[in-house]
Image (cartoon, rainbow, N blue to C red; front, side, top):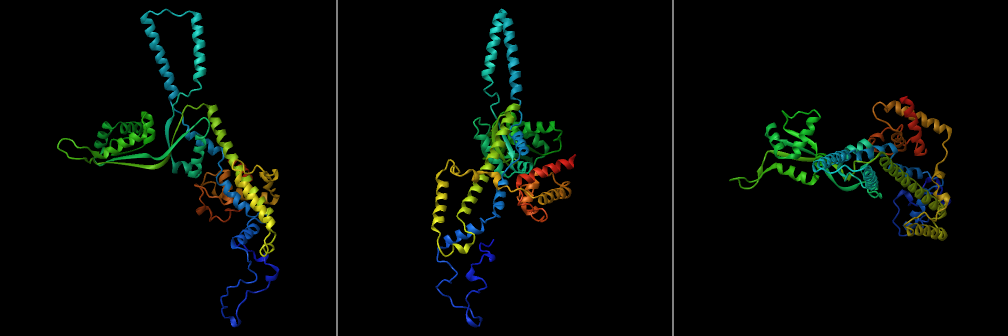
Length: 459
């Protein structure tokens, strides 16, 4: 975008051509600047041009900047899917209960064999009260110590329609919570493929000497897969390690050693064994408990949703504050400030920037309520624009609803020109009819209207 508009020429340059030599010959290079060029330093002049043209009176480019904020937001349904993936249920509670019952049976048998007298009703009441107190105290301590998890990045990104850095940020939010819901670790390769060049017999021999491979084959057989004529097996190494109660690091090292036969007898040094071990599918790696109650799951979901909403509102307030600040020191036309320096506005801008960066805890503390009001920048949508929006939403659902699993947020992103993993800008940017077609309408309004239309079409 050109910083200088043709319609905003200074009065003395209208209908005037730049100086040129007679007979259309190239004019000689002169060290003197033309009369329409300011003597101000280039960066000051550029700043003033930017103030007028980028932050215009109508704020035509504020929508362009605001859409980048909505590109990083996540809706409630997506957060719910993520919570279900991060905290899958485990059997720790069930195993603990069975262990406790078996331990009580052993104690009762020992009491009968040793001839211990049966306790009286008073002793029973006292023991029950003590057990209830222990349960109340023990309920604060979690039974599940946490399990090693791995979510394949590519699969998770496409399923949630959220970028990789967005999912990583949400996991960091969970780790920074007071309850320490998640312990993030470095990304790893979560899928292991073992291929034996010796055929199915070699695969069975490898399973006999390597417990992780045996568990992987047994787990696959439960799902109905047969290995009678197969010489390879593919399995999630982190999941298999968690089933065995091992860490994935030692399991990977043991699997990698299957490629070599160590020296035995007269053999000198290791040799290739004919087994190929490959690791693939980069994944998010973390530890999380699997015995969350319904109330705890709701608390985690509510925490993430409030954190995302807070971040969105904060960025919108910052953008509005920046817009209002630059507008307060801008001029209606660039030629009003290109010749003379407006020292008063220059000092005001410096003070605004100084106050913003000095207060690191809350840079918007000194801002007015009008500057921080996010709804103030949302202009009411005219009726004809709303009718056109509804019409475009219905046409979009009618054209692309059968091929894609549409959501209100996905449609709003396309109408605002925001790319996502499932709807990349390189592909959907060619759909000129809908791409960036309603950039002037608030993003949340489009989400609401699109969701209503999707529900209406499914009834």
